[in-house]
Image (cartoon, rainbow, N blue to C red; front, top):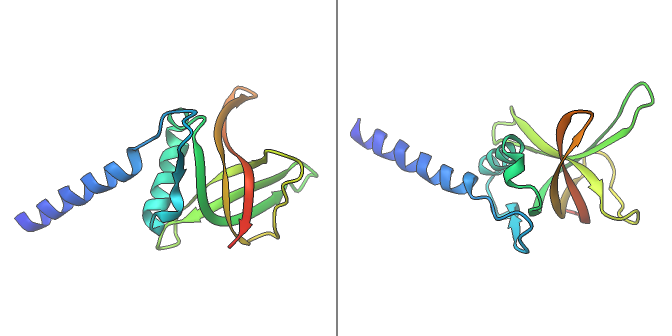
Length: 139
């Protein structure tokens, strides 16, 4: 029983160190999420969504599935990058904005790697977070 408790405590400490380390806003260093395993990647993206203001201005590099959805009532086209946990039961992701009009996104459900700046802004009284992408590669 003691071994299980020690293992669980060590694992929780490791996860906490991995997911709570937010670089200083507007730092020139890139938070490279491409090196994380599936579940830790999901946890980090979820953490960034829950604590968005701590990551505002952070440069991000990540891989995930490109997803687009057009509102059925001819609304705007939503473009995002989605990651799943290892079981595939939970998903999290960021809405994508283009840093330049020349940025091209691939077909729906394509695996991509993106780099850009995580931003938080208020829209209609709601705080929204986006990844402003300046580089897109198909993986």
